[in-house]
Image (cartoon, rainbow, N blue to C red):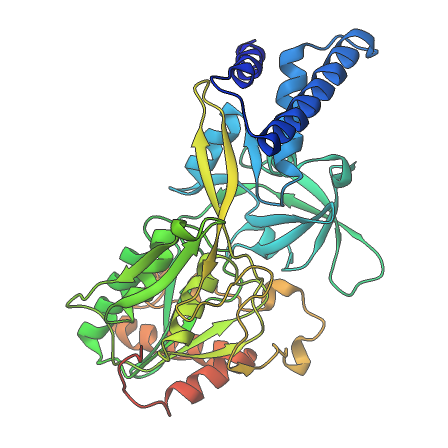
Length: 435
């Protein structure tokens, strides 16, 4: 009912005038009144004649949903429950299958699976089309409804009908929901002094995790080069993208956002810090699953001549969503601006093109394996993982070192992009970023 009252007040507000308006303004106002009159007529007609009982408040709320969803794939109305879920998913762990999705021409598209989640292990990949959720066509669902159906309590299952990119026939994939991990940074020594830093998403702890893990490694071994892996990273928080990029930059412009008003431009700048890695050579890996925040980092490092980019063109999600809370606990997510790299390139629908475009090629022996074997990092593959207790105490140090070496060899052997990244970072000079 509150929505209905607001709507009436809004109409009353539009009728108030204090002085005769110019002819052009009057015509525009007449157009507004005509649109509102038509809307009011349709609401009354549906309320009166629709086959099932429906209230004005419901109709107006559904109209708001439809209005926002028609703008672009990322604008949406958020119920009180949706608004709470949005806050939880950006701050910590939540339950679901672990995918970032978008909508394109009425189709539900997988932007990227989050690493180490049920969706990733089930073989979902960037570009997959979700046709059905538990037998219900996604053509009939909005983004929020789709997300709500995919998420659910830990241990329960959801069946997605998936059309993989390039496939002729869809397949049903049943995935057991789990807790989506909050760890967003993983590291692995590739060779002595050369560290791979993989960022799987940008949550509120990402920069802290990255700096801590780099500092921990550098205490034992001087860093000669870093391979920054942003593949299949669906994005996350803008401030974390800025501070991650700033970790490798001295200062200066990292990204700016601008809406339709030229005066709305907002610059995000780097700041000098004692632990910045401004001279360590960097190669950054990207692919079609790199979106949003990961594109901001890649674009900043590329424009500032700080890193060589290797891999495939990124997803191209370069729009800014502003979330506004409403008095009843609901909210709206509205696209208000676009991201631009330091050189003024728009990321939206364009993506970031790597300096060396190298598609991922699975080794011949792996060609028939599921996507989960791509870029797979298991617990045993990472440095400083917990032992299972079966190794002999006297040989713990030697066994640990050999396991780390074997993990690195395994990763490099099956990943041609990572292999090239390591080769290239070893040849790059130690230079500061160029602005």
